Length: 183
Image (tube, rainbow, N blue to C red; front, side, top):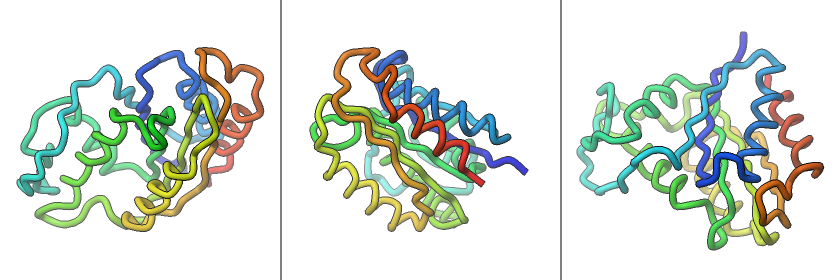
């Protein structure tokens, strides 16, 4: 039976290098029989977490805010795997992705923790002009430890600044192979 995979694409560019990694990963997962839903966060109005602790995981929309997260919550709740995709911005994930991750906290509040554990897995896809992924990987690894998710790996494409720089690079094949390897 195929897995239900959610991709949170935190790139502001639909046709950028991060999105190329996402497409390659998606090709791999779909060829392996999995169902993929991608949320391109750059098209969504997602407000920052208010820290109000008003979330209730059991509600259809667990957060008190009503914005672009509304259809992400049920998809994540029902997922087997969450893929985080982002360009490297100031040595970590983009603001678009970080804001969405912060807002997922509502699934941990109130009526039961629907985010942590539950046998989920995750992977990280990143593209960057440079190669300084260490801080982003430390954040990601810590997040996986907190959420108690299986870390299936990452694909990091450095040296890709301009749109299309990733074409012909081995990282696209690595992303495709990572997607195809999911069981």
